[in-house]
Length: 214
Ligand code: B12
Picture 1 (cartoon, rainbow, N blue to C red):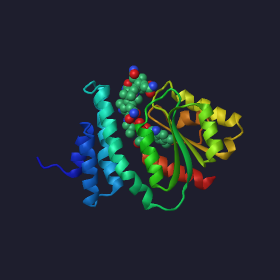
Picture 2 (picture 1 turned 180 degrees about the horizontal axis):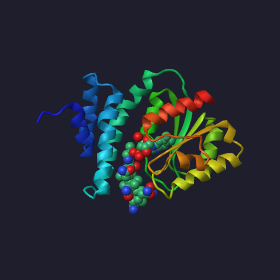
Picture 3 (picture 1 turned 180 degrees about the vertical axis):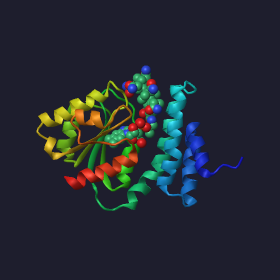
Picture 4 (picture 1 turned 90 degrees about the horizontal axis):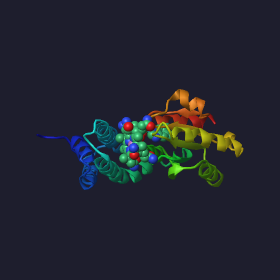
């Protein structure tokens, strides 16, 4: 069968072959494929498929982790290109996965897309406590705080973080954007966030709107 490069890259990530994912990402760029096309048409669908297989128990944690490692390896190749494209400064964002939560594939994707849109990104990592977020705002003075949660239990940490920002007297200084599988518009509002976005593209669009409106 004659597969296109995007299909091959998709397969490499689903199979968790990080060396091949890197090779195909480089080859795709050499062939003139846009970084965003590699992300939208191969990487995200591949991770979605790996997630689906996990849910249907075709995949277990090790397969999922190697798929995550493969997408990360490919994204690392694209990161400097996405950032180099836009020299304008869209604003500064601190981003992290909330306390108790170790899922970072979606958060990393959103962070890379922010960089691509010209944001200055400070990544706090995973399992971020309210105190760490408050400290990051004090240190970096961002326009935007972006929070990710993938568990119905940990999404409550979002609310705790937003309350801590408020208690520290910083709530009027930053816009708060939230996302992750268990989140939706309604919960975002209930937790006191300014906005919700359900994917990395929408995250960038919404972030730009929030910063422009501020
Ligand atoms: C990969 C994965 C893991 C990996 C994580 C590896 C890593 N480094 O991230 C591992 C194996 C470690 C893992 C562990 C666990 N997991 Co898990 N995991 C997943 C899985 C299959 C895929 C998540 C993923 O990466 N998706 C791909 C990315 C690209 O999508 P995404 O994260 O949704 O992000 C997109 C959007 O949500 C949005 N977004 C994300 N963040 C943000 C932030 C902002 C600001 C914005 C605007 C948007 C945004 O944009 C992203 C790109 O479009 C999901 C199931 C699923 N299909 O979602 C379960 C899932 C999230 N896990 C689940 C569970 C239960 C667990 C464990 C508790 C399992 C266990 N019993 O040990 C542990 C918890 C560990 C912990 N404390 O965090 C459940 C959660 C159930 C629930 N509703 O609470 C799920 C839904 C699976 C299931 N159906 O049971 N998991």
